Length: 246
Ligand SMILES: C[S@@+](CC[C@H](N)C(=O)[O-])C[C@H]1O[C@@H](n2cnc3c(N)ncnc32)[C@H](O)[C@@H]1O
Image 1: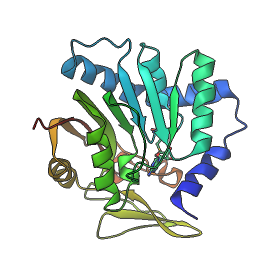
Image 2: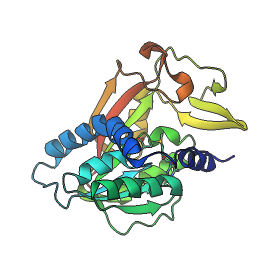
Image 3: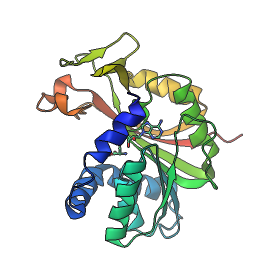
Image 4: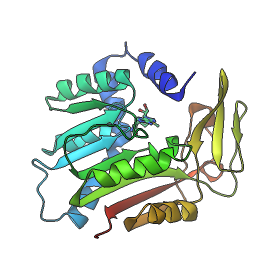
């Protein structure tokens, strides 16, 4: 089974949940990164108003961060390769009375068509799902090509720490790829060391405006990792990137 079908099936399995219940969960789990998006906008785009700010959330799933930003007046577009995720997002936006543009696409494909550039690009836990190159390089190109001249790209992603606990049904290889048995062994996460991530972002020609390693934060890659002490889970990095000026 491809990773895309796996995500699609996972979202479909939640299709019958009450929208109000889903809304509570999605907005609840997105609030931390939403606050980081607001702080980053205030710091790096202080003269811009939220009203009409062009936001693109990549690998958005149900679009939790964008839903909260739409509440501030942002003009939001969400992209994902799961049609079920986008359909559920549309229901949640409708429930809140907000507009959203949805784009079905794969961020690793160079033919993704987006009609404009954006002031704020958001990645809530997508980057670590891209396990291979040239997929990650294609993604960085997509981001760079769609940033407005003074635009910012913010992300939260999981990173490696020395001791990682790997439960049954998973393997972790020497390239820092986490594999999951989903019918067959499938690469599901790239858990880079934070210094290697920083180097990768620089090599992708971004200017790193902010990069912070949250050692105390334990990132749960999958529900099989629930209930583990934070110290043996991946840690988190939040960053803000801009295009380097030519
Ligand atoms: C870990 S989930 C995060 C979902 C959501 N952003 C959140 O924070 O709850 C990763 C999301 O990225 C999407 N995704 C993974 N690989 C993708 C790709 N190559 N192109 C587009 N979407 C992708 C998945 O369908 C899924 O919705």
